[in-house]
Amino acid sequence: MASKGGDELVKYITEKVVIYMEDPRSRRSEVPKQPWSQKWFGMLPLGLSIWRSKWNRKNKE
Image (cartoon, rainbow, N blue to C red; front, top):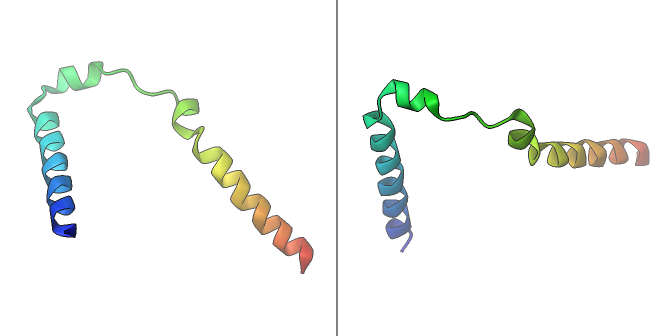
């Protein structure tokens, strides 16, 4: 059962790599880059919550 899901994942990744490699470099560079605020917005709350939990554990000891 797990093999089928793994096969589909490998197929999907392979398709994405082939599409990426077939695109000319000039076209790849035309894609607008994602602003850092959008990229890291999901990581900041996670990092703050981990930092806060470590801080709370130190205060309890």
